[in-house]
Length: 321
Image 1 (cartoon, rainbow, N blue to C red):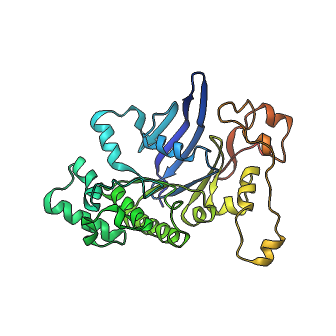
Image 2 (cartoon, rainbow, N blue to C red):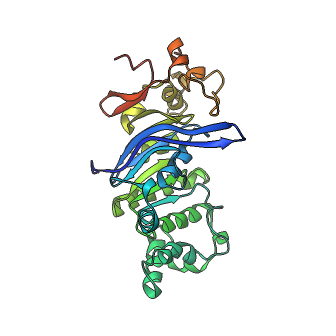
Image 3 (tube, rainbow, N blue to C red):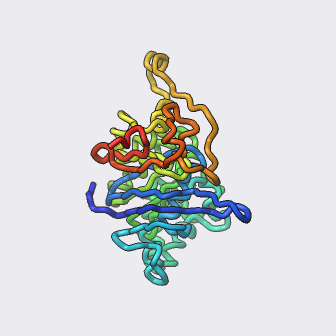
């Protein structure tokens, strides 16, 4: 894995207007980098801003504030052909394989649509490319003439992956690509993504709820809570030594396949009310549920900073320096 940055996100904010006067802070001052060939996992509860963050990084949502650099270029300043060129380099795999494929198009047309838009191949070369992509994701070239409703959920997600790969991207946002699939299929899709990354040199932002699966695929993992990044560290370090109280609670919920250890270990139960993303208050977003809360937590938002090598946390308990 390279140490060269492919994606650099600086103080990214994405707010949505709710009604006439209120603002939903879906992503609020988030910063991180992704190196070439790396997988950055992004985890957190539903509604924490993971998907919004991923789509804003891709440019599908315009940022309220902050910067997103791709190979050193601010994507928010791109227009015309330069913006079009960026869309070829960055793609997305959607969460729901049942809703993300056009039911009126054949699989070949779905995969080939981007190839036609970017004028990469035509005629026989285009069909050969489509057949090659189908084989790459574990399907047959005969499937090109069929329609999405003829396939299972796992097969549809493979089609979605082939579509994302069609225009030879460098970066892919995997937006909860396994959450709508059967457990027996999830590992197959994740292993396929890992193999494709190794073969094609891809870089991933992998968004998911399944913490054990994120550990399996990710080099580093970021934890979000109510629009904020609260912890970011190499995967093994985060899972072995979580520092933020919210991360500790999340990881304590992962079942361990050893009945003795599972019986004896302490599960951290979160109490209190979740803060409103519309009016979160001045302090830490997690303060209302934190077992270590202090007056400072209620009044000041903690700084997201490096507390150990490559280990970033936003918590007053650790920001004593």
